[in-house]
Length: 297
Image (cartoon, rainbow, N blue to C red; front, side, top):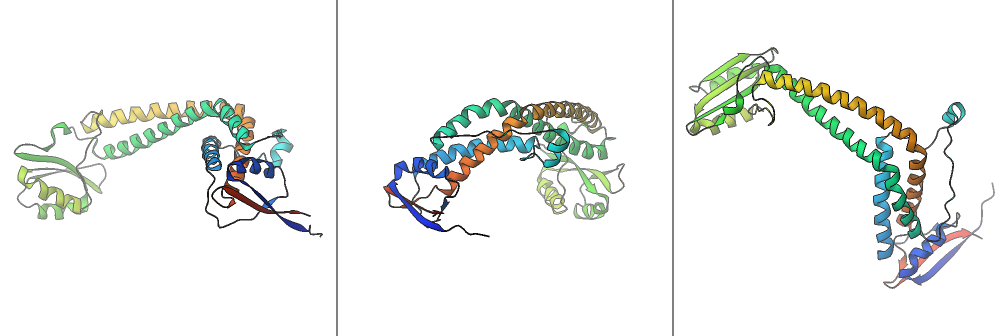
């Protein structure tokens, strides 16, 4: 196999003109930049790099959110006839390329970004309500209003869900303090209500925290009676699952519609970002840049 003979080339120019030089050099497929230890950064290039990084990130998040493969596979081309047409992008300056991307990108990804954000929020809410339901399921048979629990002027009252095996140790540690125990559906868990003087509240909390147990609370906006809160959590979960199903259908439609366009701008943004990241620190002095690299002879 023949190996091309290379020559080393250098470009010396005012540092403010280096972005234009980078654009020209990027057009040469066989130019290989020599990395230097110079830490002098060209502000104009850094500004362009920051802009394209933001654009690339916004596009990349949509592609990942929609689970679009970055390349069309050969099997898909053969069996489905899918083809993403390549677009030649001739550019006089990297800056023009970035300006063009910043104009096109919102039209392509704005709707998808909004629905992906809504989907993420729905998933978070579903996880929250599911965790709450699982906790409430343990004590859903208790008809106790928790809204008046906590530290009062003279007394401290609270509900704790504990490991049943810890009850003996709690009773011994809080000897003389009234503890009311309730058996729950899960044999491994028990509910206890502790009533004590306000001055003993710190002692109670210290002992319970040592056993990795905190006062049981129901989030604001929910009924403070466990069985009522459990019913509401079940209703919310059903609503969120239905909403998630609807969002998934909408995302599938959007994916089919924008796939070609979003892959095109993603590739363009990647190329611009890669070029700027590679050449952002030309060597030289404060006012002059030196760009060195190898080209075929």
